[in-house]
Image (cartoon, rainbow, N blue to C red; front, side, top):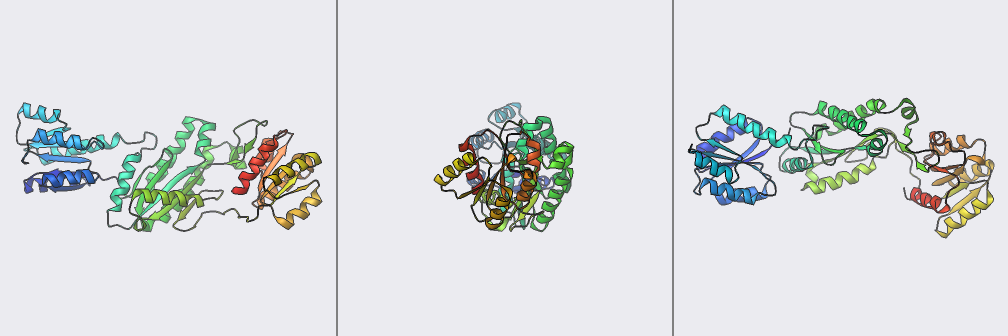
Length: 423
């Protein structure tokens, strides 16, 4: 639930207290002051979204409303004027100067609350994402700022769908929106009244909750997302655990299915929303599992993590001696240590000795090349699989990280080898 910030400006304390209680009964934050200079300072320094101004102030109500409207042109708060006057000219003048509503002092408590609720509804509805029904980035940043000032033990979860951009490209807008709607429904099902979830980017969310619940929420969301993933892919794609977005004649890196990555941090480590977002975006990079995963202040992933290989050896399994020689020379000119082999026994001997970072494997090099590819993939080693047979699906299914149709440019191979070495 998002709580708005309100400020009541009145020299009548009993009036301020009355409206403060009515607004607090709606679950919103509110403060009041009778000092105009202090009021202006609060408005400029804090995220005040509703300003209630009584005509008990020393300045003329319409003039003060105009002053407030000029000072708040960046964040456009809703201004409600309250006056004892029922004169039409006073109302029109105050509204013309920038007030969003004009209420008479004699208004009943129930009518005041209903009118205020209507303003809250309009304010928030203009910031709602139509697909997920969550509030947008501007409101989310305000929610983070407000939570930093609270005394509660709070944690922040960055929720990101990895691979959704590719899914949108392949399946289109309707399917893409369905993924966001489904995730939004899963998240909404676990939100407590005091929790908040909103967009920080089009496909990324920030969830604010009590620290004690953060890991349970992350675990449930990753589990839930993985268990509905099959609804968004064809049976073959889901079973193969990758998608293909181009024809066999085009080079393509292996793209896994969508997965949910979540990073969390606690409030007590930070003083601004910028620090929180920077920390979360850095931490979420640790989620490198093949399934949905989460990180809670420390590495704690659901699922297995790929093995990390320190060395930067490259093995090229290529039967064409001229091409192998060319690749070796070009790579070594670029400072890359490369070993070329032309048969299976030689490959097995060198492979077991050096455990390379990258392997370039040619389809025609051996009848058992698909089995070799699976072994390389199972060992967590980056595999570039070149082929003149143009069978992308079978090659990627065997475990290749990159499908490279022949003939290819040697520079293109070098670029991919360098990219995989840096991973």
